[in-house]
Length: 531
Ligand code: HEM
Image (cartoon, rainbow, N blue to C red):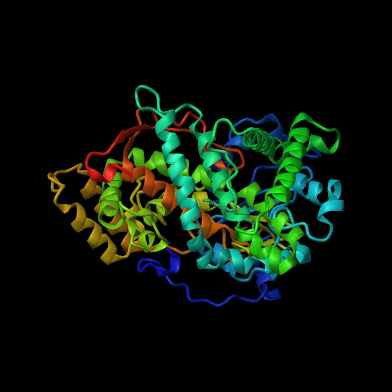
């Protein structure tokens, strides 16, 4: 992984966590009421904007809302959306320095935004099952802290992801084989390729967490078909339940029924398919089967659409950037084995591959903003913000701003490389660049962007696709290994191209493309293509 602090281009803030705001800072702060934001109406507050759903206030287009708020906030400032029905005020600090400051003084038990329907499922509807062990997702305070301390070490340890590589490779090989089988006569992938990516991600999480193959990559497995049906229902109902008005609190809406049915099915699956292999079996030995089953459920719930979305965006960005794709393939041809399976050591020799993933998550982060509910009054961007407000770190905006990432729309993985890795990758391609000195040459253009990036450095809090601190993504290393293997296998075997217009994206709540992902695959020439 290209860890933020490992890169020579990363700025070191060097600060220790600071204490909670001093009262003098509070008294000097600007009043919360003057923080910019859409003006709430009496009684209706700001909720009506999302209910009507006109730009820039559409729940599926929160990217547009964020850019709008960014403009309201002005340079280095913050904006808010206050008086939302049944929801705390949202405060958006549009500044990496401020993000660092807030994260670094994070409470011992950070509160993320509530997932009300999931909390209801775990803490009310199926309380008989979850009891005092509700897991990680939708859980806060002491129960979250207790659970995380039981599972964190085993999941976050680098060895956990390394050990998963052989099993993940089997899943990925099966998936790449499946990709070949589902190509049409024009060698295009089918319109529902995003669903195929969900299947790959689900099969991968099953192999890692439960130590079993779920069968999602086969067409004739009845149980797997049922899991896929549930996962579909689940992902379609999540945005309706978590982003729109909570009608499910009044009556059992169709989305609510689908959601509960899916959660029950996943819970049954985890109970039934927990084996003595997989990461959850280690947890079962240390903390019992119940904890292991609940963990497996949480990993299934958040470990599928996230990785699938990241894979979709990386494929899309590379398919549209021949230069980066060629460079990646050269790195693969040089470092990856052809006659045996891949190991984590092989993947460690692939800095450009890792940089490609980082660059994709910068341009198209899977989660647009990561949040914390503040547990005490605080000064944020110079405003006094009341306790209970929900601070959203809009890293989608920061990681697409010129001041942090020069020419932010351009896909230049080299931004993330150490100087010697950039040199090594340049040498690898130098022989194949014939018109490097001509204006408009993509290679020269990328080097220019990379040079500008080196000048400003990379602020370690300007792109945080996996969050930060005690509650950061527990599946980060695993997700990275999964993505590295998938991309390695695909680009080792194929040239991937895109014959359609620019993709548009929606928040579902993961940030996913709207249009069909009909990538064209052509087998690469030479030995490298035969996997
Ligand atoms: C590219 C893929 C992924 C991205 C971008 C991603 C991103 C995130 C983010 C932003 C958070 C919130 C972090 C915070 O609040 O600071 C999170 C939490 C979490 N993620 Fe991921 N994630 C990915 C894949 C996965 C996978 C594959 C798994 C498991 C198999 C996973 C499991 C979790 C869990 C359990 C949490 C909750 C942690 C807690 O609250 O203690 N994630 N993820």
